[in-house]
Image (cartoon, rainbow, N blue to C red; front, side, top):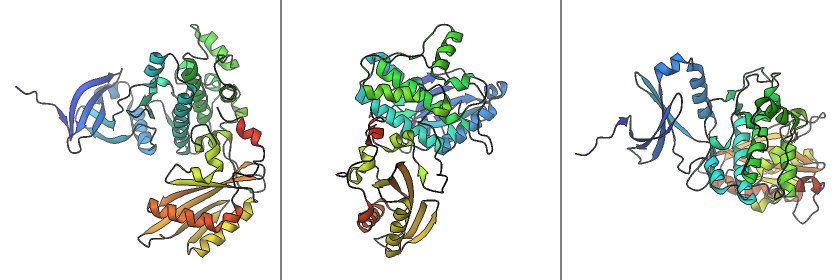
Length: 405
């Protein structure tokens, strides 16, 4: 006799693939599309007993906000009289932790790729006002193509208006930033980036930078950033990890917020954002407009003054018949697409990357991707005179070399 599989809405439920204190995770298939999903099952009685209602609501809200290729996707939330079902993207490659255990350590090239995907997703979360607060290899999954996916937002925080610092001490001790342990309040972005630095170290070393059986001793080592990089780490890797694992969050070059210059100039792009925008940890795509790999987003670099860049783009946009809204070196262009089949909206921002070196970040806000690329090609042709060419010398190039692995 054929076994009748249980169904939850349109999902046919299969085996249990994970189990925690408060939830089970089941494998399931969408009967309408055939897509595999993971269903997190929680009993309402358990949620009420442990006063987890607000935490679950926050986790669901956060997962709806942080849509990113390197974050596990929330499909929908269902409920019965006794249970809540959170339908998630099924990631079949297992935990990054398991891969590290299996291999002992991961090669620098592969570590670079995972780290780029991690900080790209973390930067996206931070832009949305979300701080994960429990980043570790066990919460990083791999899909069947080897791409990293951040999971488990159960301890995440969502920015509240007017609140600058977080105060809840949480996370896994070995990955927690020193300021989280101080109980004096901490910046959620800085704390997440510290965890990213520990993860990069673990990937390449195969073991933790801070490891003590005694918790007070562990916290002492973390607070002093007492760690040693193995001999096989490249100079670039060591430099990067030491910059991230800086015990003073105020001097951490990777998490300084974007800030306008005192003269009302363009936003200053810090090292963390530069790495996030680059492919891997190679910054050359920032400075070569022929290496634009992201279909929705493109960029070019100029050595002209920021005001000249903005005025040149405005003249070009006017000649293309586009409406212009400009404020503080950020611009939105709107109009009919070049193919005349719909509306196109584009956002441009000018960043100061180094003295006398500016990056113009261009991204599609609305419209067809092919139309956007046609627009970008036309725009760059019209502002060719302000675009920096790779054959020229990059000012302060030593700064850029120090940011690569």
